[in-house]
Length: 315
Image (cartoon, rainbow, N blue to C red):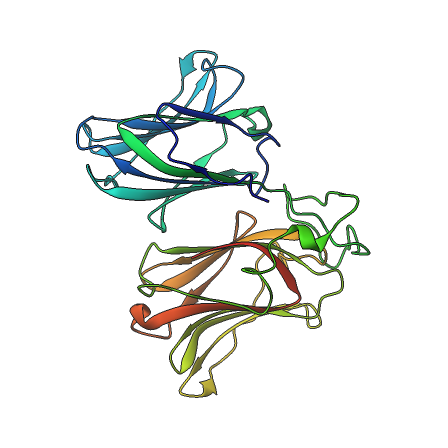
């Protein structure tokens, strides 16, 4: 659920995480870098500015983004990422997805970096933005996706992944989640096609008594990547539909097993790399799928169908 975007806020900008910071929280920042100025910061701050859990700091004077943590006035070891994806005088979109393991940052819909927690996310109280930017909107989309009533909890056939244990949420109402944009079957265009480093993020939950669901990356006349968890076969099938014919299936499961559990929430990332799609589920690497379509730019739509409810889709 979203608290609702805040439009055209002044800088410096501060807002509190009213429901705390949770697995699945998404922060979306739209703005423009000012023509002058050397740096701006996005801080996930704790009780005071003496403690900053995640410091995201693009530096035009150094040509890099610096990430760090300040604990009781003491800065830790810097993590630097180049090249700088921001440009003076140009608009940008930053998406920061929070998981149990880390903060995942995309800039202009391209995956940029991951920053592992050094301070528990439960201690984070507010978001602070400062420096050489003007803001057009800031949107905090809350995490915490409840299981479905009647879902088997702790089913040994589909064990929860480490760090993603089942949580009980009374009074689940599926109508509390967006039903217009995220109804299933779901379809959305992929503007500009795919290219290396582009990331698709899908957040939702498996229904209580599922058989199958599927995520498809399609192009005109075919399916470049078909990702199909089958609970009735205890398999995750990957394939491509080329020239009206399905290719050879890939079915091997990772060491962690099925990765999806009936009635349980999940965060799935499909990361487009030069030679393959890399799939992560709940922060764990699940599989790679080598490209069978040579021109990634022709992949122009995402579809999701089957026994899932969707909370958020980022393309």
